[in-house]
Length: 254
Ligand code: PGA
Image 1 (spheres, rainbow, N blue to C red):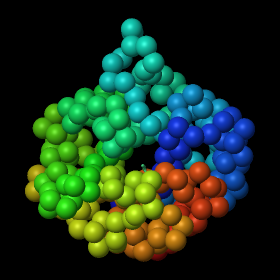
Image 2 (image 1 turned 45 degrees about the horizontal axis):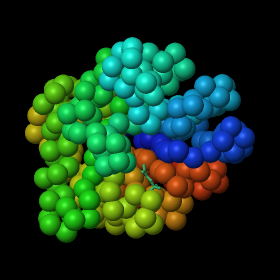
Image 3 (image 1 turned 90 degrees about the vertical axis):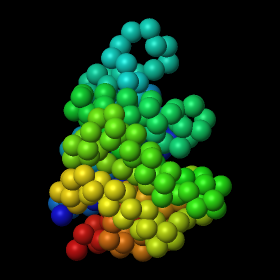
């Protein structure tokens, strides 16, 4: 069975105090279920604090971005070696906010995926269409191209280790969620695309949904055949809501 992953993307939110409280809440109720990964991705400046506070709790830690460069004169960046040093296991890459606000291209994202894998961390590769692209009927082609940029750069084998997050841009932070059918259609298309090259790898790949997933809609989304977890923004900032999603994910594995 594929891994189910519930990842909290805290984006640029929190203070040391509010993050301590949030994490205490998560630790108090996080389910320990085989095959379910609960992951928090705090702002990089709090990674050390978060990792320390987690202790033995079954919560993994990820970063929201990383440089593809190993080290040197790159002011404001951080490296994979630094993330390893802090005990980070995952890195969100190619989030639509990185693509649209910071100009990251498919090629940049593919470079970061390659560097992350080489360092032994797990990339969470984000893909997804804008509303204009959906309205123009371009969703499946656009998402396929975003996935293909990584296949071309690194090869299909990398998807034995990569996690994909399908995040329709129009659903991120808007309160608009893709219907379970809309999400399932894209997830199935991604899996079929990769199965065309390697059926085994495609079958084992975890594909997360992101975009206004919350305590109210998680169970229905997670019940879809090709939805293997969630990448959660706003709803991951409240421990009880995040834990309700984790519980729905645990339930979806039964
Ligand atoms: P949202 O964000 O849950 O607030 O829509 C998801 C994401 O951007 O990863």
